[in-house]
Amino acid sequence: MQHGLDLRWFDLKKTLQNADKKELINIIQNLYRLSEENRWCLLAGSMEPEAEPGVLEAYREIIKNEFFPEKGHGTLRYSVAEKEIDSYSKASGDFEGKLELMLFYVENGVDFTNEYGDIDEKFYNKIVDMLEKFCNLLKTPEGKPLYPRFKKRLFEIRKKSEGIGWGFEDDVELLVTDIEDFFDNPARSLHSHV
Image (cartoon, one colour):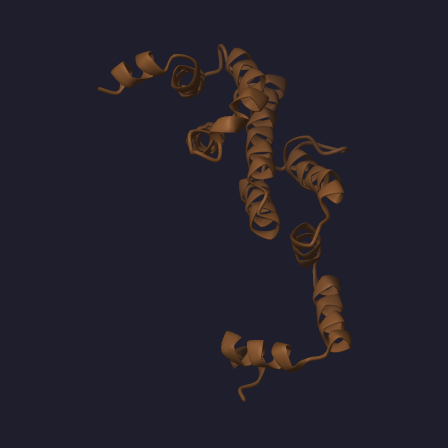
């Protein structure tokens, strides 16, 4: 058997399969104590349906903190906010929750630029990229039934984006109008892509 960092999944799996319940609980407890990311991962992956809103809200808070922390100014570490969305999605398998976090990220980005003024091209590209990913997921078979839940918020994002530079207003307008056509005017949407 290999040791340390050379340990392969196959070897680890064999060890875990041979472990009793107490040993498995100890291993999971050690992983839980090792890092905050592990804690969220383990909690999201094993959560009961009624606990889910609390876990989702904790992820929302981490994202919000990158834009609007309780003290000082937002640090805008996009990778941190984006990683939280991925972590939640992988740990929970909650598609609707993932969409919620993605749209929440965009809403915070729009509110941030309205609060602090002109930012930079990278900022606007990050927000538009997330909105585009959100819109693409909303068009999937799994996403389509969720449109009514997010529709009003999408229109609010479009409204709040009016007058923002760097082509941001135009990009948001195109994405939201495309989604609106896709769901509310399917015939018009079909013709616009021909």
